[in-house]
Length: 279
Image 1 (cartoon, helix red, strand yellow):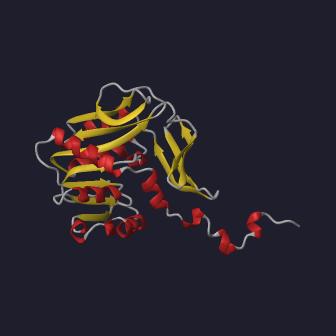
Image 2 (spheres, rainbow, N blue to C red; image 1 turned 60 degrees about the horizontal axis):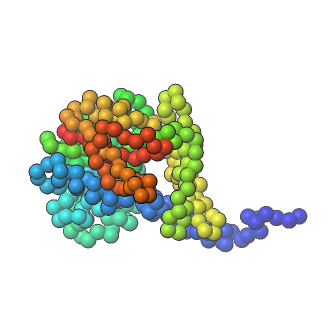
Image 3 (spheres, rainbow, N blue to C red; image 1 turned 135 degrees about the horizontal axis):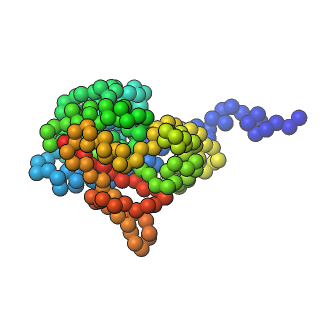
C-alpha cells in the first residue's frame, strides 16, 4: 500500500524544512516592524511639538523590545522601558535584541513583565502602542482604562503615539500575501462580527521549499474606528489629539511614507495612520 510523503520521509529529514529552522519572532520583526521609520516619525514629531529633547520612552506591548532598542541606539541620552505580559517573548528580546546592544546601551533599557492597565513606572516623555496591539481591548471601558493609565504615566508635556488601521477591506474575511527576503508573509482576516466589531486575525509564513508556519501569531481584537479612539483619548484627559495621515506618491499611486496632520483621509481599501495624543 503506497504511503504519503509524510509517512515515507524519515522524521529527521521532515524536521529539516525551512519552516522548522525559522524563528517566528525574527520573521515578525522582518515582515511587520519597521522600527527605524517608526522612531524617525516619533523623533520628528516630538521636535515639531516640543522645545526640549525627549529622553525616556515607554514601549507598551513591547514584545521583543525591538523598538525600545532602536530608541536607545539613537542617542546616549535616550532611555527606554518595555512593558509586556509575556515572559517568554521578553526573554527572547533580551537574548536576541538587547544582547546586540553594547553594555552602556543595555544599561539604559529596562523590561517589565507587567500589565499595561496597571503598570506605572517612571514617568515617560513618550509612550508607544504600535502594531495595533491595543486593539485587544474589546470594550470602551477597557480602552478608556488603558488610555488613562498612559496619561498618568506621562510627564506633564508627554506625548502618546499610536498607530491604527482601517479601510473598507479591514472588516472583510480576506488573506493577503507579501514577499519578504526568504519567505512569504501571509496576513489573514479569518472572521469579523459586525455586531461587536470583534475579529480574528492570523499571520502565517511560507517558505521556498513549500513548508509553512501556520498561525505563527493569532489575534482576537476589536476593529476600532478613528472617531472612537480619538474621542476616548480626549475623555482620558489628553488635550490635543491629532491624526497623522500618510501622503500619496502620485506617480506610483501609493503611500509615500510621509505622515502629516490631517482632518480628512482617503476612503481607501486599506490605510494605516498614526494618532498623536498630547498630555
